[in-house]
Length: 329
Image 1 (tube, rainbow, N blue to C red):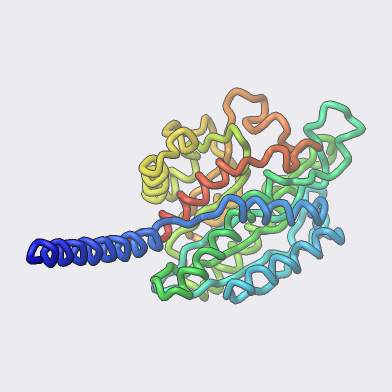
Image 2 (cartoon, rainbow, N blue to C red):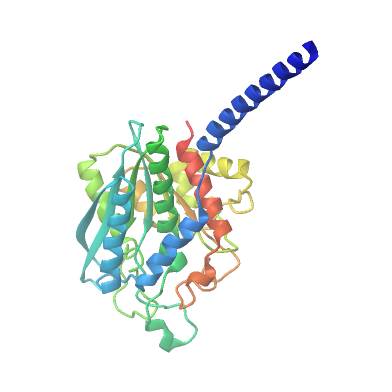
C-alpha cells in the first residue's frame, strides 16, 4: 500500500512537472516567430489579382484601397499620403503613398517599407514590342508588401495576447518603378526612380511627428533562388542594423539567403532617400544576382514577374528574420 501511495505521488509530481514544462514551452513558443509564409503568399497573390498596379490605373486605386483596409483591420492607423514629383520626362507625376502606424510598447518606432507600384513598361523584354506592356510585379513590389502585411498581422495577434511588441511605422511607397525607361531618348534626368520615397522623406524631414529608430526596406524578396548581400548604402548609413539582421538570419539557419558578401556597387533604392533625406538609417534587403547583366533576376522588369517566381521558403526566411529582429530587445 505504501509503495502504491509512493507511486501515485510520483506520478502526480511527474504530471505537475510536465504541466509546468508545457506551460513554459507554450510561453516560449508564443515568443518565437510565428510568421506564416502561406499568409504572406496570399497577400502577394491578392495584389497581383488586381493586375499591374501602375500609378493612375484602376488596379492601382483598388489595390491602394485594399491595403488601407487590411492595415486598419490589424489595428494600424492608416492614411493615404498624396503628392506629386517631377518624373523622368519632366512632367508632374501624381503619387499615393500608404502610411500606417502600429502602436506598440516602445518609445521609438521602427520603419518597415516596400514599394507597392508596378513598372509601366517591361523594358527588359527581349522582344521590343513586349517592352511597352506593364509589369505584373509579383516579386518586384508585391513580395515586400506581402511580407510586411504578414508581420503586422502577427504583431496584432501578439498585442492582443498581451505580449510586448514594437511600434511600427509602415510606408508603402508609390512610383518607385517610374524611373527612366530604356526606350526613352529625351533629356536624361537624375533621381527619376523612387519618387514616392523621395516625397515621403522630404515630408518626414520637415514634420518628424514619429521618431523612427531605423528602417528596413524589403524589395524583391520572393525569388526561389534569392540571395541578399549586404548592400553598399545600407552598410554606409545603417551598418549596425545590417549586422543585427544578418546575424539573426544566420542564427535562424537562413545564411544561404543572407550572404555575408557585399554588393559590387551601390543600389539606388528607396532606402537611400530614407537615409539621406529623412535621416533615418535604413537597410535594404534586396535580391541581388552578380552574375546577370542587370544584377537582378533574369525576369526582372519583364512579363514573367508573376506568381510562378514567388517561393514560400524565401518569404519565410525574410519574414522570420525581420520579425525576430524587430521583436528582440
